[in-house]
Amino acid sequence: MEPGSILLFLHLLGGTAWLGASIFANLVVVPYVGRRPPGERPALVRSLILGPERLVIGSALLAGTTGLILGTSSGRIAGLDGLAAPFGALWVASIVVALAVFATGGLVTSRAAAFLERDAATGEGGALERGEAALQRLRAGFAVELAGIVSILGLMVALGRS
Image (cartoon, rainbow, N blue to C red; front, side, top):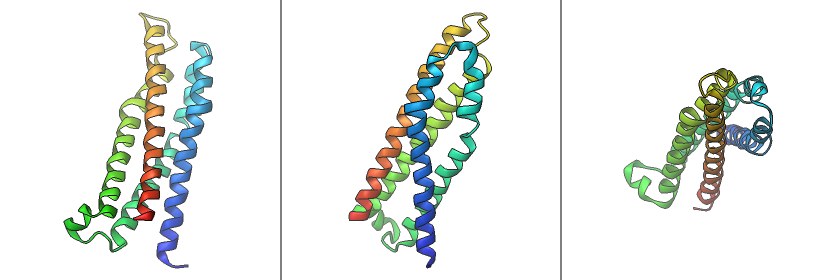
């Protein structure tokens, strides 16, 4: 097996795990957590969202790192001119979308999950209302992440055709 095949396998493995985790979070985990009473949410968020977070981040980083290597080692991006060609433009667009997804995960989704795990169930000083707002941010963050991952997948299909 040649090194490019191994990189491609790792890229697909990381991307598939990342996409699968996002779909599962959007369709199963977040709706389930949202239906539970606020007092049950911290433990659920800890085990179902924050528990697998490192694995999901690792999968995303594996997909991103191998994507960078595959893009630059393909020989289709030779200098800045290569970035203006269709392949290079699609590759850069996928990097930009991936960075936006990472930013959403770090700035919106993870923070909302951490709040739900830590503070939302106390019932003190409007914490329940803030918990509901955090749950809405969690839903929105995961939805944006999934849309971004699906966009990256579309860009990868386009890359394969360019």
